[in-house]
Length: 439
Picture (spheres, rainbow, N blue to C red):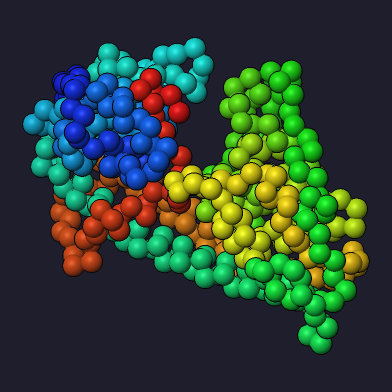
């Protein structure tokens, strides 16, 4: 056992504007940031303030270390002033210690050593980090542990990739069912008429075609700025939703600590659709009775009006024809967005009676239930394999599993690109850091 100050020195070097900017993944560590993103180009003028991190260093985000925002630096680059950069001494393998630092037990210690006014914004400064004790196997054993865990990561990454591909295929099958039902109905012999919507084509003759704003109210309910600071709610952000479903447990948060964009009040029967980063196709139908669901202002909340079956509306908004219309009319390359006024002008065709809408809903649910069950099982299997990986890492880096005699096999190799799948989906939390470390 040694304190971190015996294993690492503090690197504080600025004035290297030509180096690439690095970012952190909460699961897979530090990587080069994609600067093709226009929003991220805004930080270019602040690169003189950014810290240099050399290949083989460890970088961590002071405010996010307790979540595992730490990792070995893959190439020379720059990190935000909100990061601490430490240089390992020869007896320390930075990859081994990055695995150790992301274990749940170590992150609890990080909380003890962090300082701040608000618990979830505590910062772990270098002065505290260097006092923290760490397990130190012999250097050769550190290297062996890293090789073993990387090999296991190769197998786990392939497993997750296969499950994601399965989920993608199942989702496409479900959308095919939805698309046909909400554009043609259930009667194959029904007479059709031109919808007047280029992207939709013909619809059943008795269906009505109106702008979306005639079918729904958009953003009818909003949290007041005078809301009780102690009001606690479940927050739905862009990363919580994929087409037709929630993909992670909703975070409970108090109004006082909530981001300013947590303002859209949700009720049963609402459908939400992302109006920013529209390529994510984040759409969800609220099918529960709750008074504590609040969505980000990055969503438009559609509350169905008279003559509209709420769940049917949800399927219409999920359909490929509607979503493609949204993406085609979004503005921006890096963060495409659509104005709610534009959304409201979209022509939408609906059956003229609620009874027919309900019949179509029943048909879609009957046909897609096996697909939904398979998607849920696959997501649960991904969750379980991630839990297994976390447990395995914790056991290996603390010596509970002896890997000194392990030798790699031909399938125990994976590239950094393949291992990237170990990170969360494209909606993974990332810090859009500014020079002051803000988000």
